[in-house]
Length: 99
Image 1 (cartoon, one colour):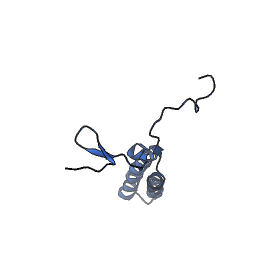
Image 2: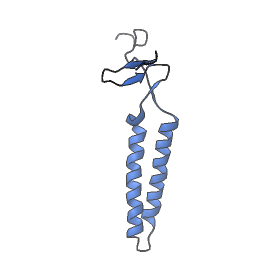
Image 3: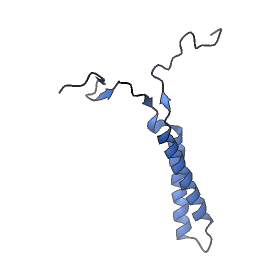
């Protein structure tokens, strides 16, 4: 099987693109973790509010607010991803004086 010039082998049989596409944080972005946790807690509150409401709807409203915040965080992470630099080590010009 022939591969293109912009793909390189990773050693495990798979290939990754080494073209001009920047490397993104993806699932390791803190906004995804925060959004996921808030979303899980929000769903728990909504279910709790529906099952055991007793005429009070504060759990439902708080849960819906948390689910909305979760959607905001995950959408923010997807629309504005964090770009990871290819070479994270600073050059001599980027280091502060005396280091």
